[in-house]
Length: 336
Image (cartoon, rainbow, N blue to C red; front, top):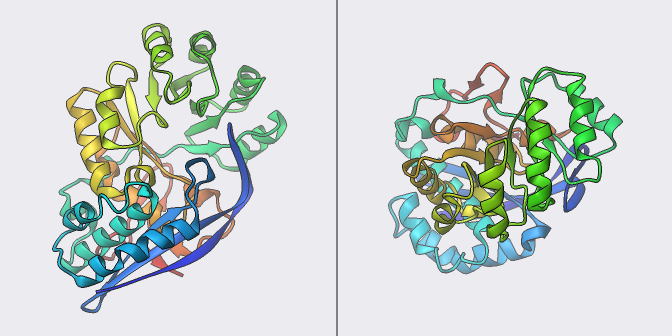
């Protein structure tokens, strides 16, 4: 068993701005596992908001290298469990390794990942396309560049309602809004009334991740369903979100990979909550992994590679009508 990794800079088509950061280039770490003539790929981007950097991802992978290359594990779940304590402060690095393990594991079996998981790819929901914060004029321009049936609109400005009202003039598409923790409970409840009239499907993470008292009010009085993102990072958060949110958005990089992500999805379903998996601004390696588990979901946000001006990998092809998987086992992604 051999572990290696490579850093890539992902250039974006537009400056991508959300409530707490902006970027033109996203750096990402792509992990490779090789064994018996097969290889698997996984990916994780850096994230300053969570303190995740290329050096600290490399450092924890090096710490775990002897276990990985020792080969005393038979499944991705077993490898994930072996690394649980080592990666407890860096789930992003564990995600990249876990994705690579799943890719390698299913390639060895000659199966696509969704086939191994016994999922039906015809049931994949249409991804949204994200419009980052900008001037209203530029947000309209970004939206018009990509004709899509569902847009996720990043908010967290002093003119949030004006943004959505103007965008609505130019399309009949479904809107989803993501405030990335920027509002108060009062703002969220008040905004929900107007947003509901503007064809918004749900609000994602309107309040700060720890404002549980505020979320009780929003959950009770909002005119729209609310979805947890920053409030639902790891498995133990799912139960905490029940009764505060109608749905959860599982980010594989934050959770630590496909292995815990699947457990979070199944637990949310048992609790009667709707589920979504969201992406970062990542290459087709990470996006392809998301696509394989998308048949489990009510919603999916896997447009990350669509926001890039150059993608170092190729994998699934996404259109509004369907997701096309490469005719290759595993996750199906490969470096260009």
